[in-house]
Length: 374
Image 1 (cartoon, rainbow, N blue to C red):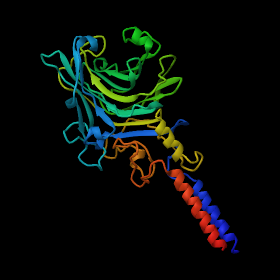
Image 2 (cartoon, helix red, strand yellow; image 1 turned 45 degrees about the vertical axis):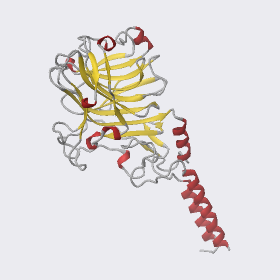
Image 3 (tube, rainbow, N blue to C red; image 1 turned 180 degrees about the vertical axis):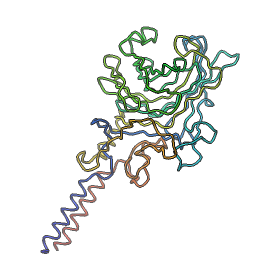
Image 4 (cartoon, helix red, strand yellow; image 1 turned 90 degrees about the vertical axis):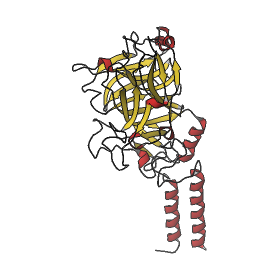
């Protein structure tokens, strides 16, 4: 190779490397062609401390008037319990406390009291603005509760997938799909008479095993799924347009028109994972994305979220794909530690400095070029 050609080839190669994505998925994650900049994944099968996962157990009490039923609600720490598998290498089996492994969200019988103990947890991040959210859940078979996976801003801005255990029987296994809105709030928080409510029959019993429930939230509509099958698309004024957060809840207020109950025994809803791929309303997060996404068209700069078209498996090989458990696929994302700056194993622990790294690569290439030419 001629002497001059060698440094030019070296420079070209270095410039090409500088233009490529610094890490896989640095520009985000795609669902059906829609790009989302941020990620939150929680593997409850291997979580011992809930409050170190980016979730916070809710603690509050409301009386029966506010709860809109004959009983009040008592949300407490003891009603949300981590029950991980014994080994981090396992993906199925009983948890360390017995029973199904995962996050247990519990409703208890109040005894002679007027407050029903219930469980609820919410993400620390409240900047979720449009996205695809899914959870693997096994509902309770104990009658008298409402189990819910939902996005929430306030009582008039809410995307709900709700399961009423009193509706489950051999012939009926419904999920209630709801957009709580100003219209439903003005109707006494009753969405049934709006166009943003549907009771959809499922082809399986939600209390018999884990299934993935999902909603994709766009600016003009919300799509609801079960095990990858589209159940319903809702549009209209009930679609939220402001940021909020994810919640998991199971409750009862004794209202025979909805939750029923209270349950006679502890009613346990178990969650094995929650995954969210979304855009952030936070200006710092938006700036972080611009800094790390050098070239959206670079190889592997975006990553497609795998579709789950079947119930999460329940045998010994029932592992589920997490970007956060791969190397170099979650730079500057929220992982199990709940810290947006947490970096997955094998990725670079540098925040907001990818552009300067690429500049350094370019400068080094120029130095090499000058050295070869001298």
